[in-house]
Length: 326
Ligand code: ASP
Image (tube, protein in one colour):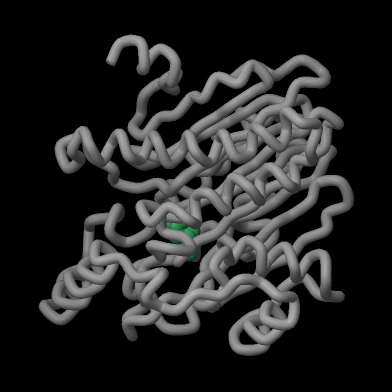
């Protein structure tokens, strides 16, 4: 995808990747996903259009996706095999590689704000479990009861996955298995940021942490190369240091953002069994959205304000055009 003019901004978001099949989707559900992505794009766009930072834009976009129960993050997160929700999130500022991450939390309404508080209000990068919750309380973050995060769909998905496991079958339905939300942006000052938030994978072991909060795996940003947010089989993304690998291919091998992102998603993650994709924004405002499975909920907005979203292996759909033809 082409890069933007020097002082233009760009924001990309994702709502997870996997086996997303048209024949399993109703038109209403499909429209709801597009709406959810557009709401996130709009939340980040308004920050960037006002001259705000990429960091604030990705935070706002991810909060919108966490608040939308359709996506596996915050409200609507998936369940562990023990029937609990354990959420992971991370944020990274490309200006100075400041980063914050949390893992295994259920409580803060917006896990991405917990990650951001770790980045800005602690001496650390990564906090987990009970102590992370205490830290969030001390920071005055909004908390919710488990009932706020509950959705029947995720609960039923857990029961189905557990029943399959009991019968000795592997759950092949990746859309039921995982999901994640993320945002990457370049602001008008040329700075980059990335944010990722997830409930992880359905029926994961209690205590399991995926790639999303691991800096360099599911989340990465530095102004000299790119900002990346991943979604997919987290264990493989961690082992291949997916986000950092994309940045390294740009930095040391002189690859373009598109070449680097495709090389990692198609030639490294896919052969290793790492189904999924990434959204990435380059220092020059270029955007890459590669995925190696049938779909990825994704969207892009630039300074022209046109919201473009897609789900399957298809070109991005302009919201204006869609509204006119409806
Ligand atoms: N990457 C996430 C994890 O492994 C799940 C996903 O993106 O689907 O926790």
